[in-house]
Length: 408
Image (cartoon, rainbow, N blue to C red; front, side, top):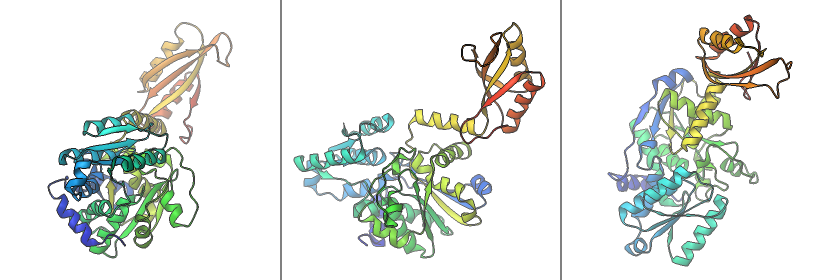
C-alpha cells in the first residue's frame, strides 16, 4: 500500500494546531434507540464543516515554495473545495477551484468566502475535472486531488487515529465512501492500532462505484442522490487496493434511509448533517440486527447541506411520520360547514397549517365542495384521532398519502 501507519502519524503531527481536534462522543439516545453503543466523530466541527480540512492541509503543507508561488487548483462539488480554499488562503497560496455548474449555491458561496477563485464549468463532476486538469497543465498549477493522493489519504486517516485513541473499545467503524480517501486512511490507522476492528463502508445505492469496482462489476450510471458528497463515478486507483485489503462489507443505502438518518441526527443530536455524513447512521438503522450489542464508531463527515434541501428533508420527514397530514374533506357547499370541520380539528388537537377549497376538480356533487386541509399532529396515533373525529361527525374524509407512509 502506498500509505502506511507512519504516514498517518506524520500527518497527525503536521495537523497539530492547524485543524480542529474534533470530539468523539457517545450518543446515549441513539445507542438506546438502536441497541448498540454508538460513538460519533464530529468532523462537522472543522473550519469548513468537513473532514476534508485534514487531507487538504497535509497536501498543501507539503508543497515547495515554488509550487506555492505558482498556486494550486482543485476540482470538487463541495467539501474538498472548501478545505483547499480555506487552508490555501491561510498559507498564502493562490487557489482556483473548478466546480460543476449545478453545485449547490451554499457550497459555491462558502468556497468563494474562503478566498478561492471559483470557476463553474461542466454539467458533471467528470467534465469539471477534465477542465481543471487542462487548466492545471496550461498554467502550471499543482492539482490537489480530492482522494487519490498519498498525503490526502494520510491526512484523512487521522480521523481513525483519533477515534481509536479516544474510544479504544470501538469494535466497528462505519464510514461513508466516495472516492475512498477517508475510509482508506481510517482503515490503515485503525487496523494498526487495533487489528481486530471491523471497517464497514457505506455508499448510496444511486452511486455504488467502490462497491461495484471491488466486486468486479462494470461502472453504472450515477443517479441523483441526497449524498452528493460521496457521488463519485470512479474510485481512486490508490484507495481501491486499500479498501480491498482492509474493509469488510460495503453497504448500499437508499435515498429514504439517508433522509431518515439526517432527520434523526437533527432531532436526536441537534446536529445538522449532509447526506454523505448521515450515510453511516443510515446503514446502522437499516441493518440494525447486524450491529446489535456492538461498539460502533460513526463519522459525521460533513455538515454542508443546502438549507433549501434541508427544509424539504424536514418536511418530508414530518409527512412520513404523520406529524403533518394532508386530508380532503367533502361537505355541503353551504355556510357553517367549513367552520364546523375546522372546529372539530381544533377540538381534536390538530393545528391547521393550510386550507383550500376545491370545486372545479372535485368528484363530488356540484352542491358539495372538497376542502383540502394540511394539519400538524403530534404523531400517527394523533393523526388517526383527528380523522376519526371528522368521520364521526359525518364528513367524508380522504387521506392523501406520501409514498411509503401507509394509510390510517
